[in-house]
Image 1 (cartoon, rainbow, N blue to C red):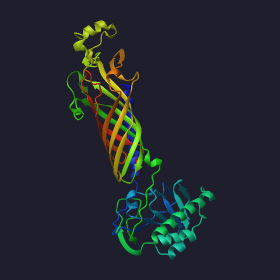
Image 2 (spheres, helix red, strand yellow):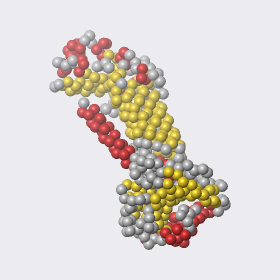
Image 3 (cartoon, one colour):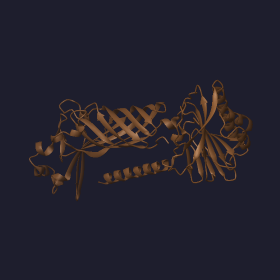
Length: 455
């Protein structure tokens, strides 16, 4: 009984953590626009509130320009990135957060120097510093060539935050110059034309003002495709799964149950933890392999279930004893108890090696995973008889590993949105060795949580 209470408490704790993560993720700003051409676009958005802290995360490339007003220019290729949909810009209170995960866009951040107090930067991100007067001389939203001109002629490290060393600033400046130089070389062969259009910011987000803003689109005849880079933190995930389980005499009919001595209760008593790693990963597809652990408990409807020498499960009261009093006569320790005080269950545990493919669109994920597994046989696995009544507690464990398969192969279908999802898992091999026993195929259906989803 205590194990059930602890399991429920642990499950509720994980759900609360997931809800907190979802609440934090909901502050991400969504900006929607329609691009008429496959080209390079520059989006501008003014910020009405004062900004005291700038945080640059992930692979973001930011040019910080001290100005008399607060606004952001986002330069990106709509064929390769979607900063207006990916939630790369977030404002929390007076903190501006730029968290471009793949570093496809350039964020030109204009902020009031008198208000800005702190600047934080991740190891993979880049911050450079520009001059507002020269920025204005090139136009309100310059092209990539103009940005490169600013980077090579007017970038400065004079306004670095106190947390950054001069050596780090020089390294960041060098990286930014090299990246912008490559952009310039790629754009030399293309015809560039500046056009102007407008769109409305969708209402409901606290992060940006609802106003008409200007877009300058840099049209390019031959857009340059850039390869997205994912490091090990993006590729390695952790999944927790809980499910209801039962079994059937075919791989597809586990929910129909089996009558007689093999009849089970459909119980919430299967759980798994696994760590898949994506060896191939793109924006919408990944191929992953990993390692995991699985524990399954099959609860019988019959109070006392035994296993014969041939590996057949049977009702002990029906075959071994005439009634429960006859059983008590052979086991005086259980005098005063009743048959209904007993319960029987089969416990199996495995080391799994998940191999699967996943398809993604925004925060929606669908995956198909093969689960080869090796059985673990310990004193905690096998056929268990438990008596739980007032004054007497007994637990008997019988090792039946010689009758069960030492390995298995399951297939699992997963559907997930952001960090939470559902799954269905079926067996392609019977649980017991096919000698005299029935062919039994377990099935699991339940819920899953991704502990570290994509932000």
